[in-house]
Length: 212
Ligand code: SAH
Image (tube, rainbow, N blue to C red; front, side):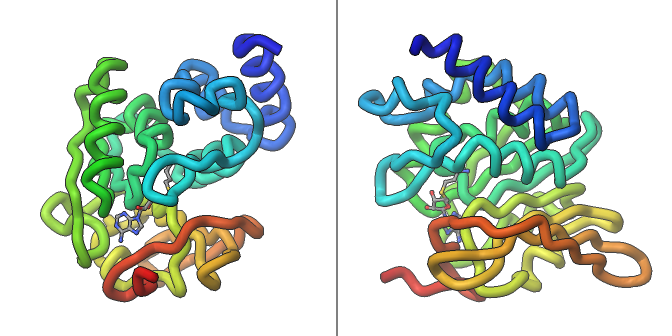
């Protein structure tokens, strides 16, 4: 099957579960084949995660769509992404938000992602390589935060970086399987919704998992 046919088939699949038309439109436009390793391009529009370098993965398209929809991004929003990885989710955030801050602990992945995103013409994004600290406090507060790696719990340091009425979407659970949680910072307190089971690589750092 050629990539164009595969892409249409994938978008049809996603449209059965994702209601936000803006999210579907953006996912139709962003070329996922540019973010997967060259040997996997034929599988770019399969609804599956794929391995990238450094033992990491590019997330499954359905999960990308679900998380993006849950973030409820408007074109005035400043958003933070923890775990740039391939940069595919970053491109989708760039399409929807006013400004994107993306952080990644592997410089090599960050450089590759930066190259592709620059090539695609995105200018509303800044990239940072982070060590132990979660997120990017210098840019806070954020209207929405997405964490694309699994955490043992909802890290307080990320809640601190969230604006009033801000949305945090994060997989929470064990190193191997998690529940996708959406946390909204209301005046009255945190409002938490479980969006279902998922599997992400572990979030590494203080307040998350050890490497290894
Ligand atoms: N959204 C990415 C997912 C990549 S996998 C994509 O679809 O391509 C998750 C990424 O999170 C990995 O690249 C991993 O290196 C990174 N990561 C793990 N812990 C991190 C941390 N504390 N800060 C920043 N990035 C982290």
